[in-house]
Amino acid sequence: MWDDCNELDCKDSKCVCKTVRKIADAQDAVDDPGCDVGCKQSIDDLLSPSTPSSGNDTVPFILYCKGSCRPFVGNGILQGTTGNNRTFRCFESPIFRVSKIHKDCCADLELLLPVTEGGSTPGPGGHEVCNYFPGNSIRNLQRTGICVKVDLCDFVGISCLEPVRALPVSDFNANNCGSSQSQSHSHS
Image 1 (cartoon, rainbow, N blue to C red):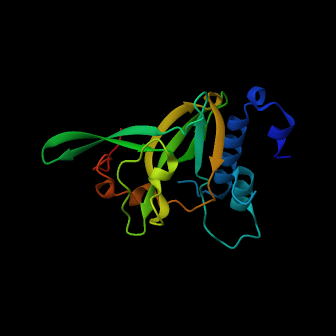
Image 2 (image 1 turned 135 degrees about the vertical axis):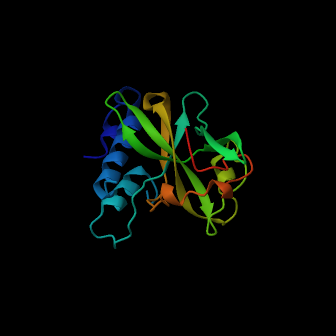
Image 3 (image 1 turned 90 degrees about the vertical axis):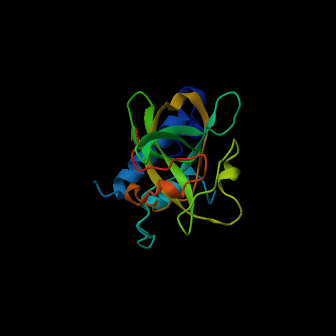
């Protein structure tokens, strides 16, 4: 059954890797090709035939680093132009969507942006996840198309958010990003 991490020593069984693999499988099952809140519940909710047609396609999650137990904040650089000049802007987020998982427990994770109802994002985040979710203003998560490759064996914890239908990359308007984030659509 799914609770195989409870039966094994997670340090030896690569529990985080197994959980992210299950998230990837669940997202693939509902994705068009082209506790109440936790990873098991989020995966079950995403795949549940009894859940009304929600259109959810993503189990967003947070990874916790070995040693510090702090959330991992992924970073990416977007390339754009301002006038005739090439510009590079930094983008960061502690919220991810698995894009691809490899046999060796390496994974390509897409950075997700918390967004308000109007489509804007909070300014610079920080080292705490809650800094990315100020007050009650966040209404959805935005796919960015920016991926980082990580070794899932280097993490000791994972926290899953409830499934969502993340806004597609085609809706990504980097001009609405906070001041420390990108202002272009192209990415490297």
